Length: 235
Ligand code: PRP
Image (tube, rainbow, N blue to C red; front, side):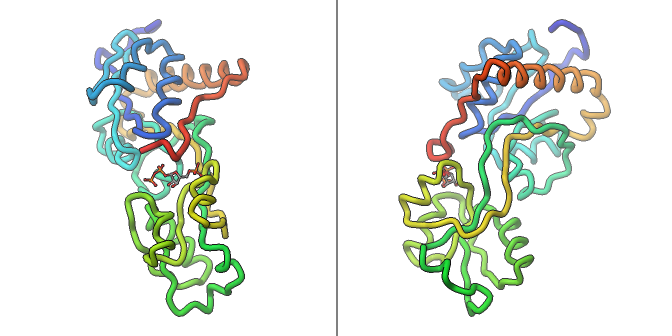
């Protein structure tokens, strides 16, 4: 580290799955040279003491929880997860990778229906809070079926009429004969910070954010894209 701050490293929670690889590339760009080792390791904590950082790799939905409780000083997570989880964290920075969209999808013929007239509409999703909010805003009465994955299966087996899920390439929708009906939000990777850490270690965190911004800018100038693992390959 070029400047010496506190002795304890800043801890960073990284999400397993599709955002992990670009996160590792980002911190590798910051000088965390051994970090790619995470990909072939089962260790859950990884230290890069030279850079004053330590890392933990956890499920994406757990990242805001670790950061809110101060178990990690910082975290990286998709804005979709952040809005769904509604945790009290500081959100200072979007990172410019991991773009995708949260959408409503269903079988092609449902597009011609007036959903307001439906007596019973069931929607399968990993995002129950955002889904309820969306349908409430539309004035459509919907029953939310909360699942933890493979939600595109639900309409095919009669578990739901619609799904609310992330779309990246659109391949999962196509291969399961679903079409996009509405967009709820767009998402990308965001840096989040524990509120107490932000106060107590402001200088170090600002310094880290500046280094992150520089690496992102450098990657942009080089025209290199972060290798975001396809959603279909993720956790
Ligand atoms: C995600 C998402 C979609 C799919 C979209 O699922 O929930 O199912 O990827 O990607 P695409 O538009 O590129 O096809 P994920 O792979 O995280 O698995 P899951 O369904 O088990 O959550």
